[in-house]
Every structure is written in C-alpha cells, then in structure tokens.
Length: 634
Image (cartoon, rainbow, N blue to C red):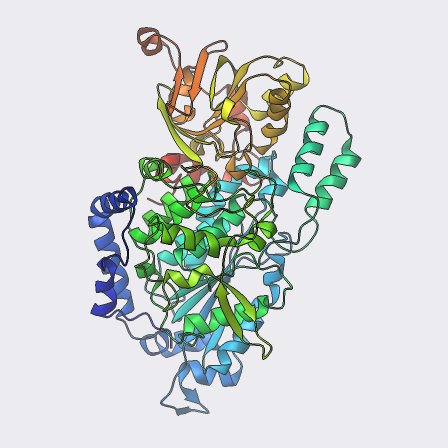
C-alpha cells in the first residue's frame, strides 16, 4: 500500500553512485546544483520526513474531523478508510488516494479527465483502497486568451494552481495522490503544490494529444496570410478549427506537450503515458495502472516512493536535458526553476546554458520541424529519446521513479495484450529519422536554447527552429510599449526594413508576463520578405516562437528598472546567438548616463484593471525575476 513513511534506506538512495558514466558536463552541473542547494534541500527533506512520520490521518485526527472527511463516502469505502464497520473496529484499513483534478470541458486537453475519478475509485476498491477527489484546480487555455487581457492572468495561474493543490491536500487524510492535468501552467502548478506535500507518493495522470488535424505548418501559413490581409476571418477560423478539432492537447510541441515529455523524463508518469490519444484502447488501462502504481500494486509490484524524494537534483537535471534534447518550450526556463525551488533545489539559466552546449538535439517537432506530436510518438516518442540520452550518458539512470524499474522503464512503449493487461516493449530504432534521431547522429550537436548576456540584461533564445543565417541580427530597433503597438506599426507598413522590435513592460511585475504569440505572424511575414528582423522582450513567447529570432524573458524587466527601459528608437542592437550576447551598441558612458523610462501613464492605468486582474495585484507586486521562476511565494 502507498504510504508516506520514510526509511533510512530510501533516504540514503539520494546519493547512490551512477550506474553508468555520465557526460562530464552533466555530472558537473548536477554536482554544482547539489552543492548550491545543500541547505535548502536538507531543510526540505527534514520537513517532509517529519510529515511522513505521523500517524495516518484517520488515526491522527479527532473523531469529528474524521467524520467530516468521509461523510459523503459510500459505506463500504468509509469502512475501508476508517476501519469502522457498523460501529465495529476492524484491523485492516485501506489507503486513501487524494485526487487533484484540473478537469474542465473548456480545455480540449482536460475534457477527457471528466471520468478519470470514477475509473480510479473503481480500481482502488479492487485493491482494498479508496479514493476521493480532494479538490479541483483552475485550468485556463492560453490558446483562448492569447492576445487578450485574460492572458495577463496566465503565468500567475501556475501559482494559483499550486495553492489550490495545497488547499486540496491540506485536508491531510490522504496516503498518496494522483495529479490529473496536462497543459501549460497546470502541470507546473500541480507539481509545485504536490512537492509541498512531498511526503506523499504521487503519480501524474495525463489525457494525451488530440488526433492530427490540419498540419501545424499549414495553419501557420494561413496565419501569415491573414496578417497580410490576404485571407479573411472565415478562412482563418476554418484553418484554426481544422487544426484544433477534438479532445486532447494541441498537437504542436509547445508548453503542454513539453510538460508531458519532462514528466516522463522525471519518472512521474506510468511509463509511456504521455502521448497516447484520448479514446485509445490503452488509455483507460494506463489510468488504472496509475492508481495501482501509487498504491504499490502496479504490474511491477513495488512501493511508490514519496514525490519529494523522487524529485531530487538528478531528476531535475534529467528534465532539463530532456527539454533541451527535444527543443521544448522556453516557458520551462521559468517553470522548472520554480518546480526545483519547491523541492529545495536551486537552478538557474547558467545551468540550462551549460547543458545546452553539450546535449544533442534529437527531435524535429513543430515548431522546430513539420511533424506533430502524434508523428513524434509514432517515430519512437519519449521512450526513444530517453533511451538515447541514457545510453549516451546525458541522463542519470540512478534515480527513483514512481516504479521500481527505474528510468530504463521509461524507454518503453505501452500496449494492451489480448487479455486486457498492459505490456511494455522497447521503443526500438527510430521509425522516422526526419522526426527523431539517435544521439550518434543528432539534428544538432547542441541543444536548442541559448543564454544571452550583455548590457540589455540576461535573456534566452530558442534557436532550434531559427534558420542558421538568422542567428546573428544587427539592426536599428523600434521600441514598443505593447504588442498592440507593434501590430499597428506593422499594419501601417512602418516595419518594412531590417529592424529589431523591442516590446517592453511585459514582465511579471509589469503585467503578469503574458505570452506574445500574436507577434509571430507579422514578424514572420517581415522575415519572409527578406528583412532581418528579431524580437527583444521581457515577455514570453513559449515553445511556439518558431523561426523568428526572439530574445525573451529579458531580466531584469523594464518595470523593475531593467535596461530595456533605457532603449530608444533607432538604437543599434546586436543579437548574437553564437557569441551568446545581447547588446545595444552605445558607448558605456552614454549608456550609463541615460535615464530609465517609466511605464506610460495610460498603460499603467490600464494594467491590472478588468478581467479579474485586480485580484492578482499581489502576485505582480511580489513576483521574482523570470530567472528566479517568476514566483510569488518565496
């Protein structure tokens, strides 16, 4: 049965020697993270060990507390969890699973989660256990709010979800937990919340991607035509609807699907669960297996360890490597800093940069290629990538996972046998080397992310989809105080030239750091005309930034007195992904003497007003920098 009790043998496994020789850079980055994090990690482990050593909730709490917790349960379940059967105490008590769900039918990726609790409860009963929906967490769709005021709530919805997860689990009557969620801020939020209850064994349960519709590159072409006025709303809506057409996550490799890749690399899923479509015959059985796994009754029959021990510095490095090897979402340079911090582990962009220099790029999935995630799965998927990275020494094999087979188990692909039981088979060779390649013959010898440094601050750029001849852009800049202002300049034909567009006042403290996807089509049009263009912003672009060079997450942000507040129209800016620099070409003396602009009064008055943004004022006020995870809770 699942339990949160530590043993010295489990705790000692944290520093087991590696099973195989690691790449020296991976080893060095892991070691410096371990050393840097020693005080905070020790305090974290001490805290979850103290929580784990308590009696189970039904024994620890007062009778009135217990009665309230289980009043709505069917009598048979109530007897299992309390040990009280018709006023008679029975010896055997069952474990109680807390389910935290992000279900709503607004999100295509989360709509399939509606029936998961019933599946889990039925499976739990087969093993003498019970399950309760501990709580629901909000889940917003960035695709719906993109370019609107609602998007300014998006980043901080992650911390809201983490807090909602904590509220759900604070009833403190659970022996283990299942996290039901898929998309952008939802998984990081669930993970941060779960790590604050790190004494509980916890498994994440996804729903999978929608089946393939209109190819992503075809959709992008229609968007670019719409930006030029060559097609109207009817044609654009038809294309978008053909791309986003059913149950499941969007099929491009953005933040949502990067989440799923990282959870596989961290060993927090049932192996191979990430990219199985909703409705596939194996999907419901994988959900049942998640219940069995967290109860210690899985097909491998091993106890599921507490999540706070699974997520150690090696686990975090494995996630970082998987992100880089697949050209995943730049959002995770923010989110995984926060996730690591929740487990007492301190990482920064220098760590990502060092790993990116050596980790090979093994996939080409849109926007880094033409394939979608279904084609990625068919070609070998996460199992293939993890196996290649393990075999080449880029990932730690000596880690805890939710199963006993270790990370090697996550190199396999699940299917259902004739008798209805699950089986896992090796991912084998790549089925399509235009989509996934072996580590010995990668698409690129280094990862798809670069850290840029210079007198404009620190920022990141995703170069895996950017043409090689666009890795260095030097041009006069045009400064915008909003993304709408850039759109207006584009429509007025003011940007038909070599130009670096600076969009500022888009950071966490300014307006919640919305994603700026709506800027991609006009900038792509300009690039397609042959102009050398780039974007520099303290906002976000996520995994869909695509082929236009974009220095994003510039820190410190303009609203916090960062150097973007000094930039003036016409300044020459040089973005150099090879040298990893981002510079405004102004003399040091002139740059030092320049005053900082402040947010325009009209923009300041509009920021944080309407669409519920007033409620997030404390988040904006207390947010750390992007490199510190844009956190509001430490």
